[in-house]
Every structure is written in structure tokens, then in C-alpha cells.
Amino acid sequence: MNILNQKRAKKKTSNPFSKNGNNPADIIISSLGSCWLIGGALRDAFLKKKFSDLDIVLEPSANLKQKIISLAKKLNASAFEMDAENHVWRLTGHGDSHFQIDILPFQGKTLQEDIMRRDFTANALALKLEPDTPLKYLPEKSLFSLRLQKKKLIDLCGGIKDLQAGRLAMVSDNIFREDPLRMLRAYRLAASHGLKISPKTLRMIKRDARLIKNSAGERIREELMKIFAREDSCAYIKKMNSSGLLFEIFPELAAQPGCATDYYGKGGVLKHTLTVLERTDLLFARIKEFCPSYKKLANYIDLKQPAIYKLTALLHDVAKPAKAAMIGERLRFFGHEECGAKMARAILERLHFSKEDIKLITSVIGSHLRPGNLAVNTVISERAMFRLFRAMGNALMPLLILCWADYASYITLARLEKIKSVLPKMPDETDVTKLPYNSPKKTMRFMQAIYMLARTYMEKSPQLSGKTLADGNDIMRELKIKPGPEIGSILEQMKMLQFEGKIKSRQEALLWLKNMAGKKNKHSIKKSKTKKI
Image (cartoon, rainbow, N blue to C red):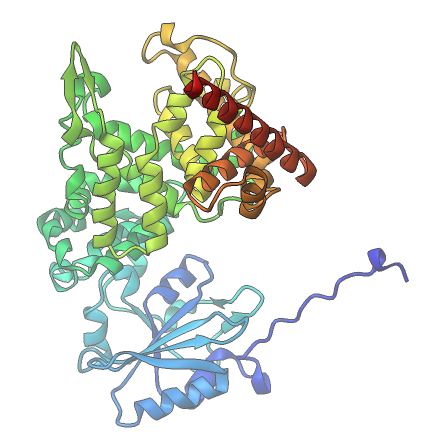
């Protein structure tokens, strides 16, 4: 049989909830007894969305741990206690089952008290799990679905009414004082579900915004990254700015609105920053339109996880106010990229980002003027590109994404739509130094340079990542030199020649070394004769 004509058998995804024909509710009840589904799952079910997590509450009992371990065994899941003080447990599925179930006793004396301690009315919903509860698990998607029976729903705070109105409202006036992170969660939930935060809730966020500093950095980070994952993240960052929450999380941005207002207009540097973020949203939302080579681009960055690049956009000019100075009659920001990288590092460490993320973001911010410095040249040489590519490494594509959004922020959306088809074309040899500082033609050429850099990098990345065709031993043998820094310099020259296509084989590399040795010998002989004279 022709192997090309054989159909690959789809791997069957196991369903831990299907044992003995039982549905999820049956298995959960069999271990936990009387219990209630509460919160986000019910909100999502009402909005006709599937969900990956279950939150379950039950009456306090002495044998809670045994019940949870029993359920974990039935579901082939791991169980660990997240909060020993409040007896909060989490079950996570093994293998290809990525479900998550949080189980905890009432946080009040009764279910009603527990509901009233919730954050938003949309989450203050409860449903008693019964054998006929139409809860299903879809193993191929690792998601749950629930056909909601409104008559059985416990809604003490008007959550359904608020959801019907597309409104996110708080349960009580003290929810943010009890847990300040709820302010950030309000924007995340509004973004995720298309809800509008109620006026009263917004007033309470403005009142309590300063309290966000009391939340753990990693919790703030998680909520922020969920907001940045949205296609319209900038809209919610702007709303956070209106309530004062943005500057409480990022006090380093607070000087931006009053800086460079003559240049950027009302809102100053912050206006520019938010426009760059908006353009980053646009690029990822419509990547196929703005990047014809998006399939190749996906080999270098995760197009489905844009949050890290949007955060970079928000922080890229963080140091402009600190570095603003009038040089002649022009406002300049010399050194803001290096200073910005240091400031960004402090912010990211405060929010407990990983070392890998910090390295990427600070590298991009610290180098975000380099592509523009190349684009100023009438012709961008391969050697100049090589030096940029080698210096940036894996941060090259994230850098180009930031620069694309940065340049795109200087032209209107209407003009960007108009010129998008010509952006991937090679830049002409226009002398941009003779163009007005902020002319659309100059901006377009800079953007074309970004496309050229990206295209060249994708074409030549094998030469960059591959090994040199000769090694240090070859260099020492051919040039008759000892180990030292000179070898590294020669290897770098050889790598550049490989990149330019001037050396394509080991034989050519060795010939180049022999020629270099010959020139070195001639230089030594000439120098020796000069000394004798």
C-alpha cells in the first residue's frame, strides 16, 4: 500500500469522566456528596461559552481531604492543597486531560454567605450538582459545557440581570478592599466577555486604585497578560488609565502624559505609547493582511501568544520623560532606549516575570532604535544586517514587531490601510535625511525596511544558526597563531562571509584562511625590511 495514501489514525483522547457511563456531575457527587458549582463556569454557561475550570463548594467536613483524594483517583488527576488555611484544593487532569477543578468549603457559614463574599454579581451564581445536571466534558478540547437550567440557578445578587444587560457589577462596596486584585480582574473579565463595567464599580476602582500595590506581583502579572492576550487590549489599557489604575501598576508611566505635548499632542508620550500598543493589537489581529510571510514568521514567534509583545509596546518609551532635553530647537530623547531597558527590568522584576521574558523585553527596548538607524542609510548593506541579526539573536523578530508598530503609530489608520499592499516591497534608495522629520514617505520607507530585515532574516537564519565551516583549530594551524581573542574575531569574519554567500563550503573556508595567512606573511616580510632600512 502506498504510504502517502494511508490516512493517519486520529489519536483518541481519553475522557476521565466517562467511566461507567457517568457524567461529570455523577462522578463528582459520588466522592464529594452534596456540593455546588459556583462562579465563572455558570457565568460562561449563561453566555453560551465552554469553560476549562470548575469551582465547587461544599459544607465543611472533617474528611474533606479523603473525599478529594477519592475524586482524584477516579479522575486520574493530581490533587494538591493550594491554601491550607482555607482548605482550598485543586485537581488537575493528567496526560491529555487538561481540566482543572478547585474545591473548597464554604467561606461563610452557609452557601448564601459564601455567595455574598464573591467579587462580581456575574460570578455570584450557584447551582447544586445533581445526577441529572447536564454537565459535559469534551476531552478533545479539554473543555466543559453546561446546558443551564435557570430555574435551578441560585442568583442572590442579580447576576443574570447584569449579564443580560452586558454589565459587570460588584457584589458589595468593599470587594476591592478585601482583595485589590479584583480591580484588575474587572478589566480582564470585561475584556474576555464583552461586558461594560458599571459606573458605581468604576467609582470604587478610582477610590481604591492605590491599593493594587498590596497585591502580589505575580498575581498582577497573570491578570495583565490575560488582558494583553485580547485583540483589543489597548481599549482596556486606556480604560485602566482613565480610572487611575494604570499608573498605580506602572508609576513609571505617570510622567508620560505631560512630556512632549507639543510634539505628540494632548497626552504627550503616553498618547504615542498607547497608539503603538493599538498598532500592535492591529498587527496581530490582522497578521495575514499585514504580513504576507506570516506562516514563516510563525517559526520565530508564537503568533497566538502576543501578550509579551504588547507589554513591550507599553514599556518601550518608559524612559522618554527622564531623557527629554531640548537640543537646539528640537526636543530629543538621547539614551532613552538604554535607560528604558533598565527601567523595564525593574518593573518586570517587580511583577515576577521569568528571566527569559525579562531578557527578551529589555533586549528589544534597549535596541528599538537600531532598525531605524539602519533605515536612514540609502542602502542597507548585508554586513549591517548581519551585525544586527547576530546581536539580537532570538529577539530580532520581536524587535521588528515593536518597530513596525512604532513607525505605524506616526500615520493614520486610513493611510496604513491604503499603503499596506506596498509595505512588503523593497525600499527605494531615497535619501531620507532630506525628507521632513515626520513625513509619511519617510515613515513608509522605514516600514519597508522592517519588512526587508524580516525577509532577509528568515531567508538567511540557517547561515546565522549554522556552524562555521572551519573551527579554531583550523585557524591556529593555517595562521600559525596561539589560542586567544584573535580566533574569535576571525570566526566572526568567517560567519559574516558565510552570511553574505562568499564562503559556501569548508574547502572555500580553508582557502580563505590560506589567503589570509599569505597576506599576513607578506605584511611581516615588509615590516621586517622596513626595520632593517
